[in-house]
View 1 (cartoon, rainbow, N blue to C red):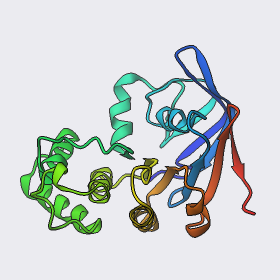
View 2 (tube, one colour):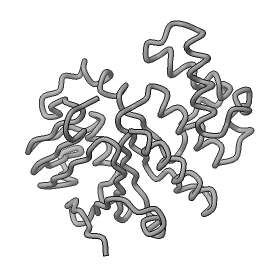
View 3 (cartoon, rainbow, N blue to C red):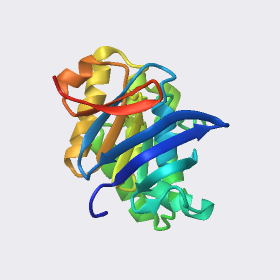
Length: 226
């Protein structure tokens, strides 16, 4: 595990195609912390997440993620960085032509797992952790939105990441299902993974308190709890 903050940004600017999306931002997250990222659509939340896993370049300031200097990281080191980060997308991005189990097998094999017994054991562990242990044989289209999101979270935690990025994980779900997904993420957080979750749903912040940063007018600022 990393010592000190998992992410440390100081006076960072993030650009996308010649356009500055976020300027002069400072941010940090420690092991086991739960951080919300709020702000309107288009305010830069997803852009910020993309800078963390090396999808977008950082031009100014100082930025380290899991010990990597994100201004000078080499392309060949980005896969190793991403293996230590779990990503939960709003639109699931499950492989629709494979069962749940095959989706998870695909990720483990792609990240270097070789032993089939180890692979099957780990898949059973994560499916049990997200309450989906009986659904391994199902195809994604046979699952509800909430069930699919649980599988996406199972996929994100396969390699026991130090950091999980959840981009609007409740965005396409009804209120009750959304709450269950947040509870699941917080449970995972309590076991040691730090989590950054973007959300539009401000009600979640009062029900499940955490540190809050807001994206607005090209800035990212920590909000004081009222």
